[in-house]
Length: 487
Image (cartoon, rainbow, N blue to C red; front, top):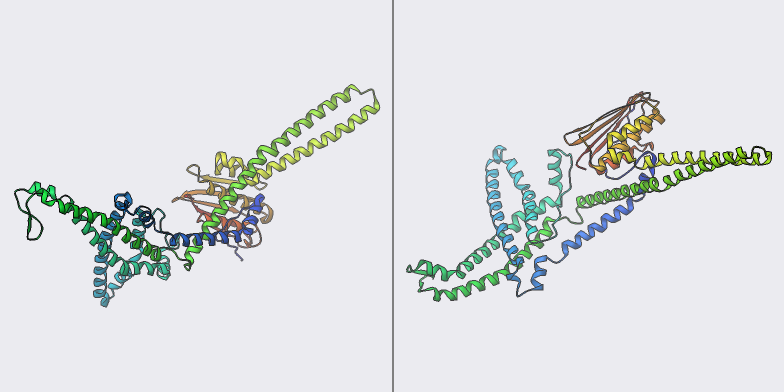
């Protein structure tokens, strides 16, 4: 007993049935997708080497920079980073000490593993904190692992170079930068205190105030030099904050962002490129369907009506000239040609309507998946039982993929399986559309035999779904689609 099975594991795009051109188009465009991925990767590397936004603002307005909002954002970033770094260092020291102490009994090994993976949350928080000063976010260097279990995710993260770069940033780079940030924050607070020193002296009078140990300040006027010193400290602190923030950003780009040698970044960008390519083709296919429906189809309808009017006029003329044998024969011949042309126009109109339905049925756009599948079932030569219980309209890509999956399965059942009955069952469970198409045919379907199933599997993979076909010899054949309804 043989079993054919197709599982969507690789990303791509495809189409089915009357739109096999979609699969050919996307297959022929794989090289374009790769080039797009490489260009995007190069653009990402260029972005990472671009000038830091804070440094660019400092160079544009060096004298006024401490008085701008960019300077305030730098101070907020450094203060937040100092607090985050201090908490991280304390937690890591505690986990390391506890893990080493308990490692002799084996309990400390999970704690040491947590220390090794501590760069993941710390790096994610640092990338989010960078948004205070950088308009362009630092991309996540890790591969997306949809549907993977915890053991698989753990193994993958431990093998990624980005994980160890993030750990190096957390253990080696963050502590000195945290210390510098704490020092600058303390300097700014002290400078701010000096700025308001005349007010402090006035409020505390007649108590003795010593801003410098051993030197009392007699009155508010004598505190004005300290105010000037505080303003100078704030002014210089603005420049120092910009330079320290620049160092933070450059090191974050170097250690916390993706690199060209990371395979995950290239695979992710290739996936996104092919997804954009599939979206572009879907939009083009809908445009073709709309043009055929509103253009050529309407013209054929008008042509059929015109031929009908011409046939009516010829019949009246033939009745009026019934006494003239020669004219009657000519009129009858012309009427036969018009009737033949009218029949051919009707046939062309039906073929065009079938082509439009194959490209993208209007009922799917207007009424949703359940109505579109019901319409296909009514026109199918094999009896089809439809049981679709959906909560409402699904996202457009999900509906389109599910519809063409059903039509491909029904087409294969009618052409190859010899089935006498087909069932279509669909539900939305835990945010995923689960669709099952089963026929009672002879089975033995081979997904690699050019039935369009591989193109469907690629298309489903773009939506992070799965397409499974089970077809043992002797039947039955079952096709199961699972796709997230979030798109």
